[in-house]
Length: 225
Image: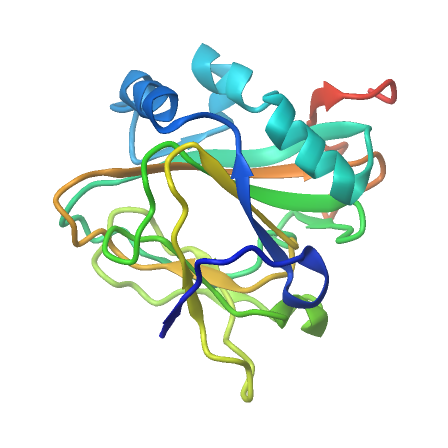
């Protein structure tokens, strides 16, 4: 499995690395402030002031605006902590489609934010470059694997896909992904926790709810909200 270290464009590969939103020391301080609220904290910006400020960082918002435009809201996301030795793995999936919603890939983008360093040994993301070009794939619930995080929605990697790559992300940097890009992550086998944010930013009209309800969005920038 290749370890990616260079910055690529979103277009052909479906991701962009190297978005710096803080220095290592500041990111580490924020990680220490938000740790201990659970392995998975949904919509953490609603309960943690540090995250509410982080999701509006100019470096992140400007990078998102370059992809989907200046009118930006959060559709969803998680604060994720992978503790050393815990059986916390995330199966292959796409962020833009689920049981209750689907995101327009032209008006949505995932941002993965590293509060602590993400490495090949502590559960950094695995991506399949270019997999977003296959569109949304059929989904199913993953098989039980002994973890404590339920049975996540997953999909099968199509035959003939490129080999997965590991994408290390230093603390204080972020990764942008097409919401259709196939990605996963293994357990943390290091001696330190891995803490990160998975954020789904959207432009107006990006969200289709399968249940007919209005999406609950958290405005970030622009006059449309």
